[in-house]
Image (tube, rainbow, N blue to C red; front, top):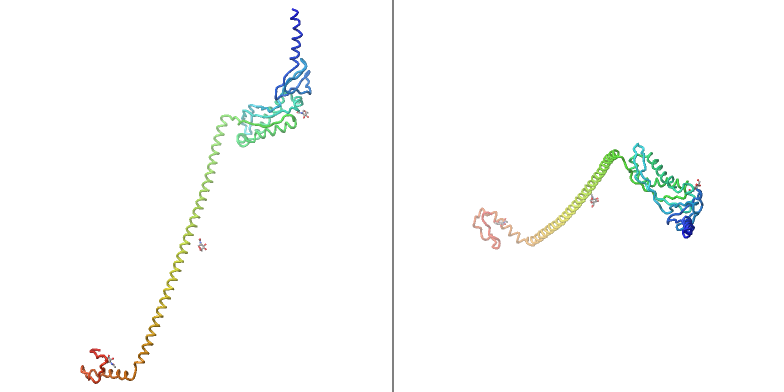
Length: 315
Ligand SMILES: *[C@@H]1O[C@H](CO)[C@@H](O)[C@H](O)[C@H]1NC(C)=O
Ligand SMILES: *[C@@H]1O[C@H](CO)[C@@H](O)[C@H](O)[C@H]1NC(C)=O
Ligand SMILES: *[C@@H]1O[C@H](CO)[C@@H](O)[C@H](O)[C@H]1NC(C)=O
């Protein structure tokens, strides 16, 4: 009985010690409320001490954390509402400003600062954009726009929270709208293809023109070369015939010279021959010829020069 009584203060002590110490996880800090008021002290990871029954401690994360904002509605300018399944916001609370931030916005500071703000920014963006823009043209910028809007707000109202990145999933579109949308996309693609093929055809025509030009130029060059060759040939032909003419002229001149020479020599020879005796002989022969009719065949031998040829009949 006494033993049991002795156990009571021990158990009380153990309880007080257990209530008076607490642990903080790695990557977190702890703030303390005493009587409902937030103290300025900050507890770091490991064992920490508090006043049992009076203090209430709460942990907040100070490493990178990802807040997933789910099912964010997006009412487009065209009146269709689509939903973003998930928008992730990677953010971090600065340990230095943890107490101040918790004082301003409580430990669930990310509810007003991130969750509500993201929904607000998305609804603002959507109200000025068409479905097409949200889905395709503006979608790639959406992450940056949300991040920019968040940073602006945080800088002004909660400098302890920093936004690192924002990732939005593709919005979910109602089935009916989706069907129309796809139809429009198909038509659009067709238009694009038509434009492309026009471009290709233009290029083809251009290429053909170029080829034709090149061919024509080649032909012209070939013709030019052929022409030049012919010119050269006829030039050569002319030269050859000029040379032949020259040769023949030279030959004719040589022949004429020869003729002249022979004539001169003949004349000289004749001159030497035309002695008085010779002339006399010729005279006699002429006389003989003239008198042939009267003497007939029987030419008196006294008139006949034995050395000269015999007169022949019928001359
Ligand atoms: C807390 O709120 C005060 C007053 O609005 C503001 O000046 C201060 O910057 C805020 N601090 C943080 C860390 O949110
Ligand atoms: C033909 O040849 C002449 C001289 O060789 C040159 O001046 C002319 O440009 C050429 N024409 C073409 C079409 O090649
Ligand atoms: C005489 O006749 C002979 C032959 O009939 C002829 O060769 C000769 O030249 C003539 N002579 C003359 C001077 O006519």
